[in-house]
Image 1 (tube, rainbow, N blue to C red):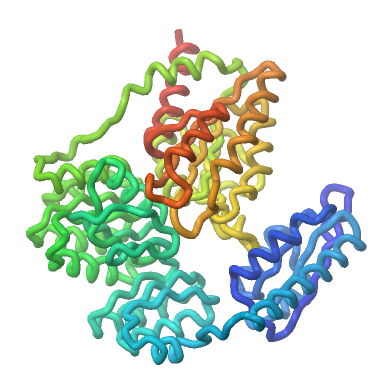
Image 2: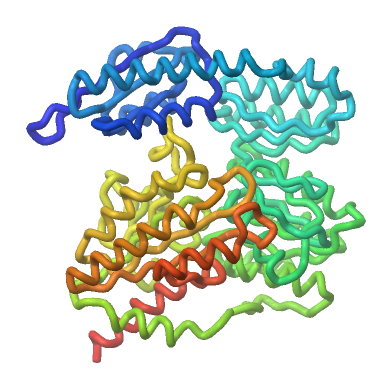
Length: 530
């Protein structure tokens, strides 16, 4: 029983011993049960250490949960009363039984890597998405069988990651991951990836949505990619030493179809960054490097081209691919944002003074923070690199706040918000109803693996919230950007149209969206000073 003030909210938990289900099934069941009347929260997940920790964060851990093992299934429901909670748990069980029955009725499918290799000996790449406790074992089997690996799974120990990447290096194979969400190999989009043209730009990315933003903009400008190789977010740490990043760079330097290299990462360990830059500068192909949130000095000192934003990184890569001379200066600053910023700022009421960012892409959230923080005097976030700006309770925003809603805190037992954008709506309404909020900043990510119509989910809510604020005598500015291409299943232009018709400002990139918001607050500050 969780206490919220003086109110006790019933929590019902059921543990099913040695009952494994894949994460996609469990997220789907969680979503279905959460939608029941009277259910406040529902989590259906394997009892891994991380899931236990995240359940504790939402007040749904019991002694039974603590005693469960990673092989056990947890069904946890928080509801308005005991009857609703019990009914929700029973419903979750029924859905799982139905899913198993349906699966058994399907044509038999491959159940192991060994049988997959026997049925198709020509397979040369394996995408693995199983619980972290089993992921390293399956990746090792694939590597030992001579196949490249994209390891989508997270919760893999760093010791296993290092061992797997050493094994891959010995065998001359790619070991992308763990926690690798985006890759495009020989024109095939894998996991969360966009439909982009083939071309001469090879991309090595340690960040998923950062990579998606860059390759989408490359496509929009008119160029294409040769290969997009993901590395996993820990590859450039001191412990891993950039093994996959450097192996990928070597492969692209030798690839006859790659004319320009791009490397994208959050700030790497300094010694690893030096090794990566040294390897790039020793090659014959030009390279653009964007270590998000760091200055360009180290990249320039290595004789390479620094990307100043994700958009700038893409634009510089395209310019180099077209044979143009490129310097460290921003090559594609974009349109003059002053007129729009001035119009938006003039509509705000005096008490509206904060921006709230609700992001589905973690790297896009990071980029917005880095662009906004110097002007706003700091930004709170659940993923702030500075502990002093880390939200104590991610469920409550504070002053200027940027949220990565795809962070583990928000996704335990639930689909990622790129898969199910409706999960962002309750937080959107919470921010829109705050009379001190001036701007809500949003990303919309397209491509394979994500929701078929994310803008269609957002647009009606944006329009309704803006009208509600108007009736209350204030103006709500909603600023968005869409990460995607015209070839994506959702359709870039159709998604942008829906957002514009709802009253949102749609910018050509995440960086421009953040800069527009920054400019709005700069203009308001100038008005106060004058």
